Image 1: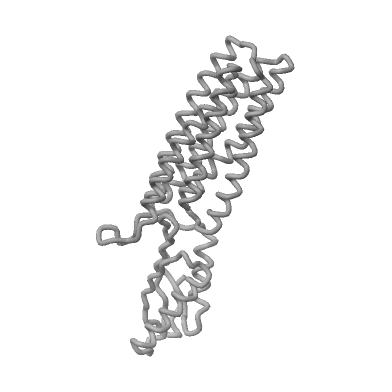
Image 2: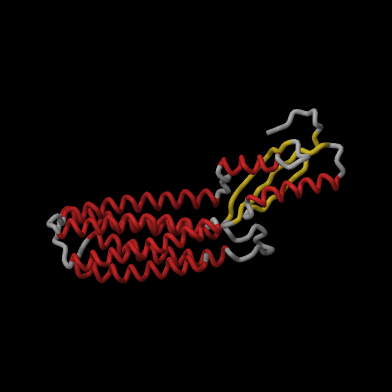
Length: 287
């Protein structure tokens, strides 16, 4: 996760420098959109780097559930940065639409955008690997806005190509369209981060699978009051299992541990808390 945040920051700063030179020589509003986005990507990735470093700290006396929600706070910060970039690019695009200007040094701009596409694609592949391994909210948010960058850079490349053939107005139009897409990405990131901060339940299919795993342990009569939430890379699962009332305390404890082990075997990132309820086999089970 730390390596992914360093890679994102290095990519954003490198592309920002390349786009700044190309924009200075061309005056393209689409390149300005890309430059603004890369600068804010760099700020967001720096925030992400700090948040991930803090989120990976182990639980302590003041944070018994760990520090994972720092990732969600970073996601909200990213959404703010990305939303601001969308507004700035949109305003400049409207100004350039009303007052179109020719694009200078289009070949340099095209070369820079090809570099941006290659670097962004390489970063996305690495981030995808990290998210698959860790489930990190912060890296997923970072990956989401770099996926939007992939589309953004493709749009800029197309705008520069069209402008070089005599349609400079399309540069401004592409800039406005890209701004709207960036704004939508910011809202998506903010919604996901807010869900983590508000202890939103895991996806229904995951909760259903956890319930089935608990009920599938031999000796368990049923399960109810399943609660789930996420913090950073860790899941927290709480549930009540219904056990035969004639069991001894030791037997009930062993079955509860088997339920925990069954869930963790399939979902190793889950911290599971099981409460045993006595239940007669003839009593209708709760769901």
